[in-house]
Image 1 (tube, rainbow, N blue to C red):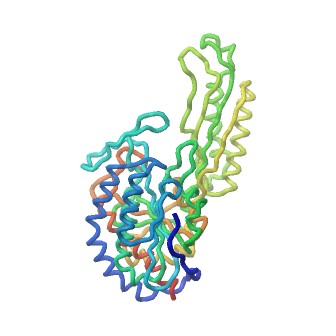
Image 2: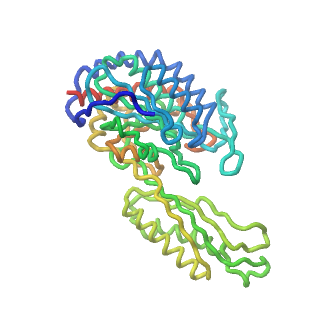
Length: 431
């Protein structure tokens, strides 16, 4: 499905001072957010109660597409399986900006007392699992739907075009499938309407509601995924001398891989090497033929990525040779580093301060979590910030845990801040 109209190319964004007209819109935006927030919070509750795993966000995509159509936006569906894009063309000339929200949930069984908590169960990798918005994507989607509502209500005053990207599979497509931001780009999401910048936000389980944080430059790590198959020779557990024991070799490999971080890389170079899965054996008295290790590597520099992979191969080769076995390594560079464009970050910082107050805008350290937003931000300048979501007097479990809980009160804050960033960017680019 194609957009029904084309957009003239706009000029590159400028770092010029912000026109007073953009600031003058703040009261109108605040009033619109206040009026819309109850409905958007209801939508968030509905999305939270009906979470869907990556590449399976069919219901969520339908809710989003219906909402965007009701606002009179041009809507495209079915991008990267279930992705949705809405185009809002303002009544005044100006540049194009994209905002992105992710829609997928996780195979986590919720452990909260919320009256609208998820009870959904489904199959994932051959197992029955609970499904939960344990990373706040329901908040991201609801906030972006709210921003679309605010801007649609003031369309005639919007100086440019806004592309609303609702992305599936941010948490990664299931094995054997493609998905996420890369697939959206491969399928031409920017082909007909190309933004000059892209914005995104993420809930933050370690920041109170009412605060915003961001990291200039490299903000979130690159994520690599590895699978190691260590092969030996099977034998009776009572006759280990007849085996080539892959369990012993795997145990040695796990410990040796930790020396990459501690002995091969600079202590000033952030990185993580984690083995998260070990699988092998069928019975307590049988030494198996093969053991499989799976894990992740997180880095902020391609040179460090190269060094980690090189040393991993050397270690696995040495351990298995010494044990008389062999190995195979599948090493995939899944997600690049998320980098906040420094000029764009400087350009948008005053907006954050104006809307939130300087005391509520924090520079946060980089995180070794990874974010699919990186693919968009590697294509056009990007700005990705953190939305505080911990209610006063409460605690939240970490992201990807059963007790993760994001505060509804953060939703109107997210709407107001993202709307302000969009309008300020468009206004500055239009002069």
